[in-house]
Image (tube, rainbow over all chains, first blue to last red; front, side, top):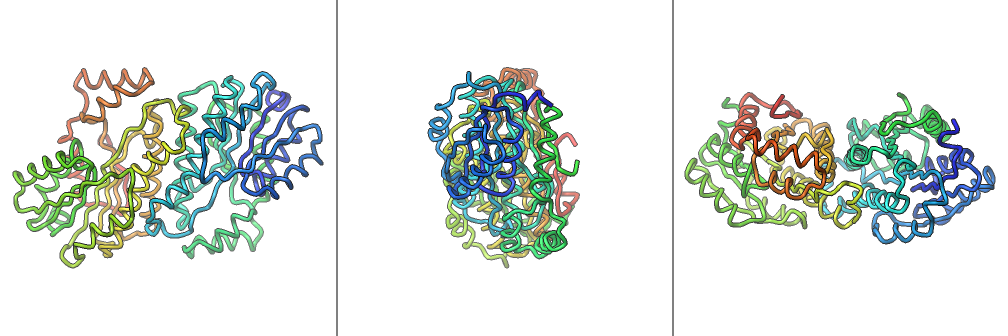
Length: 255
Length: 255
């Protein structure tokens, strides 16, 4: 249990303003060793402040830093600049959680015809993640002390009609993680699929998705209250980390 | 045998200037019904002309049209403009072969840190393919008469260290094809993995790839002449088409 949580940690979470990201921030903060630092990124400053307040309540000994950022227009230098303020020697563990994601247009994939929109989608969901990972590894160097967590989805390995961009993006991210782990075997890399979770993304999917079957599935899960609560799925993630992580794993909430 | 090849066909092949693409053009042209049209795309006008001459020799009854194009800066309108010159009523079958690809930087994926380079890579290998597919389906409408072939790679499903961008791009393309097939079940969609083939890409990989193990593997395959010849792997593709295609399949040369 203490192997991971008992260390002074630098933790960076993207998509930290709401939903699963906020819950990860909260539950990780409760576990992290006093003196650890948590950096939260998202577009919404208000949302980030809300998460920060929550952390201050549950874990006042954790320092929080906010990094408001739009992942759809990522720049390598922005990530380097953010991280160069921290010294690798000040921490015993480095935790990078790629949680930021967008759900895509909801259109059938054959109607996703504009290369510029694909660029924007993949910049938000793949290119920014890759660039931030690079900057993180460069900044903190000791790969045996670095854990990279990729929040993924069933859509990465199984088609969800109407969520094509989302599936393509998540499949690309999972392959990125596999390659990263293979090339950098000292890292611990986890792709965690949280299951269908009660967040604002569900409402946006219901609102947008053109595919009736997918829409019905999400409406049914919402109305019958079978969506997971963020705290449930994040508890599973915390438990996975607590028992220790292998160099590479891909785990679903329902595994 | 005649189900597919016995029809007047509109066939578009990307990456048609050399290697596997040129061989697909040649072998398909030999099979296509007289009066069929083949459109070849690639950056190199010289290469395209070479393929065109080859087709004129082996199948003079096939009309060839060249579409020199740089897939790294795709525009939806360019694909629409290309295809609007052809009428869906003039053909009984529509064959789209996504063969164009680039091998990436050869760097470890953690050194692929520039979001702009990711954008350019994915534009060439995913976004252009998606946009061209959209334009093709919109132009020719009759999905029961359309076959989409995605030239993929083992790297889409198994890590090849040092070819991370390539693996990420191919994984993303394969998921695109799965979603497309699921949402448009009248199409026939094939992801074909041609095996390691003796093309200029092999020399470029040997030249570029930083990973010594991957470099050695490719050098060994080249020097021991165990690389497949383009005509061998394309013959397998032709045979697969000849026996008929299900709505979706993913087949490797070695399956």
